Image (cartoon, rainbow over all chains, first blue to last red; front, side, top):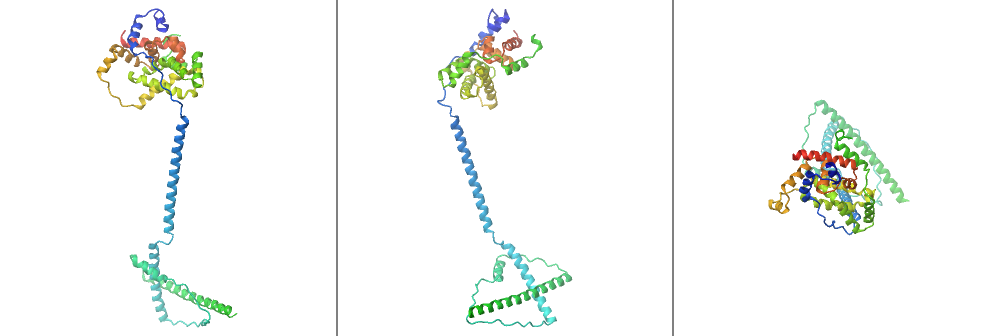
Amino acid sequence: MKDDYLWDKTGEDAEIQGLENALQAFRFQENAPPELPQKVFTVERKSGRKFFRFGFAFAAFAGVVIVCWVVWFQLSGSHQTPVAEIASVMSALERTEKIADDSFIESRAAAPVKSIETAPPVVNPNVVKIRQKSPPVGQRNRAVLRKIKLKEPAETLTAEEKYAYNQLMLALSITGSQLKIVKDKVQGIEDQNAVIETAK
Amino acid sequence: MPDSEMTGNMFFFATTATAAHKVSAPAQEIVERVRAGDVEAFGELYKMFAPIVHGIILARVRRDEVDDIVQEVFLSAYKNLNSLRDPSAVGAWLAMIARNRAAEFYRSARPTEDLPEDLHEKENRSSEAREILKAIRSLPDTYRETLVLRLVEGMTGPEIAERTGLTPESVRVNLHRGMKLLKEKLGI
């Protein structure tokens, strides 16, 4: 029976036998099995990956440290107020001082101010005052200003605004002078105390 | 059940999934020996299953690449033998590796060059045989694998069933339906 030959090669089938003969050339030629490795180094492969992982982690960590260091260095370098900021503040202060001085002179000329009599500070020849010398702030700021030439902002104030501004500056300058008086008084008291202590 | 009532593909996958028929005890013993480090046992395993693996790959891949892939399949099997849960199903397991390797071969898309004509002459294979193999390869997966194992490797139906883990019934159906389609293609 044809079906039997196809299934278990019993009987005969010329067509199938012809196909078998033709395709016999492609049949598996028995050969030696593949050479086996001595051992299957699955662990070694893993360790290689592990080493790579550690290396990558170390490189990443080093990169982060370097970035942090650079950021910290830059921040510490810019810990002081930026020069441009100082310059702008100083220019604004100078302008206000100038305006305040002008208005103060004007107001003084208009209405005489009572002279304030203050007790002269007690000077003890035994006490020697030592003050730390430091360059005046104005001098430093001027040096900075010399380096950086800033554009003067265009003043577009109306007459009323200018008057109000002058009044405000006058008030500020008066307050400043009063504060100076208080400071001198306090210093005088401190000096007196120092004299008393040295006398004791 | 008449052949016309079921499709070959459905039958093939259903029987593969269940793997009702498993390899006989000697194969199981060989696997255990290979696992214990017996290199000679690996040679026996190769001798027993190389034709199956060869046939499965030949049904999918060019002839000149088949031998290399067969070696790769057995090396891969040796390295991963501990992952085989049921040693009695080693035939089906090897067949699966062979199918995967054949699929990988096309996915990797290695650059190839045509062999010179004189090399084909040296191989002394008739153009008729190539035409038949080409016709078999054009059939659906279900049939071409079984037909190559039967016509090229010269295995009987029961042997195919035993070594691939398919049921004898599915192998019989695949053989008959595949042969019918092949004859139609060849005009026999």
